[in-house]
Image 1 (tube, one colour):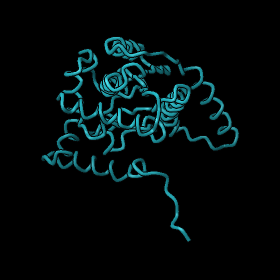
Image 2: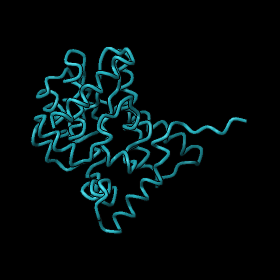
Image 3: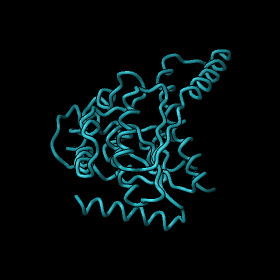
Image 4: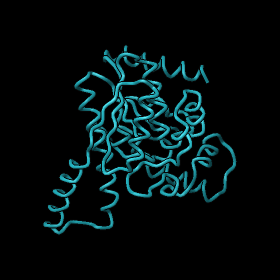
Length: 246
């Protein structure tokens, strides 16, 4: 495990040298993936790393867990509450859509959730520009393969150090790095709405996704779900599409 940590820390340091930035930052959600990245960037840039907590009408427990992660990692951190900003922007957009007769209530919940993720991305890049830092993402291999992230939201980052690690491997690294046990053991959730969990939303489990990525046998139903998610989200893993030159 130490070798894996060393490889990722050196890679992060190499990216800093290559781009000429002064440091690294991450959004700390209170979940296990961001907790691991918090520790990695602190190791890579001990004096120039930063964690940002961005509650947005979130469960207060998530902020408490995020703060515990930051304090245990001894990383500089700050909290920027996006609740009011989200309310104003979402209300203005909805008002205009309703007025124009274009509002689709069936998509309102997802639009709300994605807006939260994109506000967080914008916040991270605003702070990163202020500090001349790179934004480090938290998506693991399971999330990357299935596209379980918001395009230009939590998928809008400069670096993705966990993209080759399964959820199980992230959990093992978290234990090794001393992430608080309450974070290691909590049920994965993007915290996008009350009661939301990753696995309920995906319709399969991280265990099955990890096994699939390792080439192991899983139930056919779960295999179909995973492959369909991968197919439908291919655009999230690509740069902006442009037509052929003519």
